[in-house]
Length: 393
Image (cartoon, rainbow, N blue to C red; front, side, top):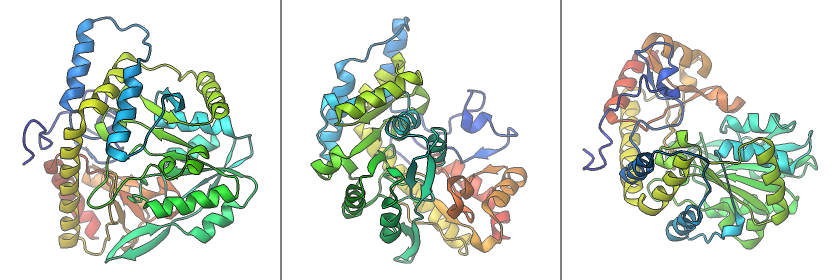
């Protein structure tokens, strides 16, 4: 059991709270292990900060104080060895709005944006909604130490970067849904290829605190000054601290010209203001939240080990990919003979369990499903037991 005060085993009733994860289920008996938010209460330091602000009772327009920036700067220096500077930092209401605004700012309609599939589904909409084309460099599905994982196909990656129409590379670091935490040398090689071909790197690092075992998160822009100036990074405490509904993200960009263009796009889309609670939550998370994050990582890792044991014992024909980061294991369902859309629909309708079909993340996901394990272990156990009869078929 997780020691108090961080009791991740406690099941919190989320139905009836306007929860996307729970209240959009077709029936009330569905267990949702799909969209990437956690079924845990936020860290006590965040709850306390929000309560203090709530007690004030006035919720007018808010300005963003120095403490907001200082908290993020201190956090990344202390825990990731990356020194941010205040002038590089911008804020907006979420990482997806940040990506969309940056794509709009740094491309012209018809340009191509490179992604590594399978990859987070909102990348596709952020690119296409800005009149750009998605260019895909599929990751290589390989076995490593007896467990499937993914690697970069560097030859294909360079071939696609060499296309003059490719202006941006949208990196996912750590990678959702492949579960990879890219090693420094992998990031460096991707960065060098992009530099050779004049491709700007946009690095989505929203899962940066959710890294397990001996894996180490490396901020892409921390590798060298050259890559720092040739990239834009998106950060947020939202995924790691389970505060996505508060809507906050940070954009890191050293170029004054690029910042001005991104700022214009943010204002064009009217995502330029933060609510009062988002400000307080980021300050609390990045100043007092480290003990909670440490406990959370340990609990999520144990959930992953539980899932691995369950599949090994009951479903050995369905390989579970190595999970280096995120709380979203990626499962190979090829042996079932069904597409992920078919299987997930059957699981939802008949087993009352909601997983993500891999097709959401590109054509390479057709025979995979994504499982959100950021829930009490009892919930995870119940969901897997419900799904077991259909997964055995």
